[in-house]
Image 1: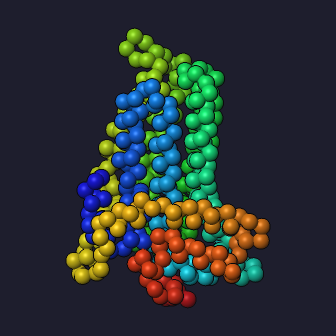
Image 2: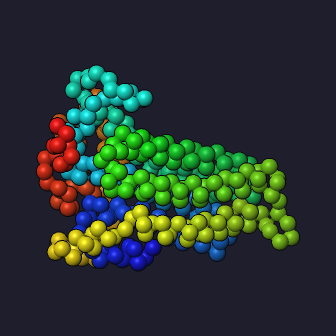
Image 3: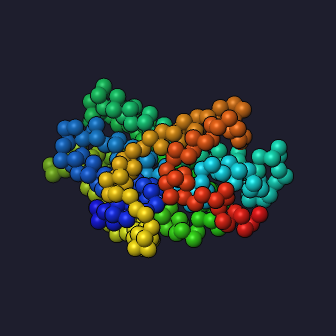
Length: 328
């Protein structure tokens, strides 16, 4: 994944998209590295185990923000765009417009359902660390409590992914030309195939189907084997990311003479995740009574421009995206 990241940073022509690309791409090597440490340091591995899931949550949110960027690159007109889309019911049938809201309330709902994973994952990670520090790692009592925490974390992930799927389904005509479905399937594949073996192994250990033996210890079943499987899966998925998150588009833009920022500037923008904290703050504002489904006329929603898809970061500066202008 390092060469792919290098080519993006070397041709940093559209920071608004590329920083999100790299945040999704870097999930693979980070998760693989964390699982290597889990195998390497068995004594502290229980404390490390929640962090691959924690990193995974940032990838989920970054993928969603990337899709939002594709649909409305200019944050200053984002509310206007969603406010102009007709409302639909759960089956996709149009419903009468109420108070000029359009689909803005729907967009707020999707935003909340996706960004909840960051707050939820912080809570489950802290809970896992507390449980590990206060009980014997091999006790059945702790194992059951960990299972409950893991189930909650998995529910958070499922909710976020279903929200992204719904967003894609509603705005498919805008997202499909950018290969968004393949990006979504690739990342969902990473989550599913890293989660499924672990769930199966944990269930088999809980029901005593897999037991410690002369050659395989309890730590091997609980930590070593799931971590090894995760490393192998991350390696197998790496080539797919070359096809779904390519740097070709940006390299061609650089060859045409489009302005590109330095390698170091790009790396700093990827590491600086303050924009995601702004997204969490916006989620809270959207959830507040009186704000849900309404425009932030006092400038609250303008904070979206500090997210990685504003016009100054390489997005179009037209009042509305071209496709929206054509359809209205």
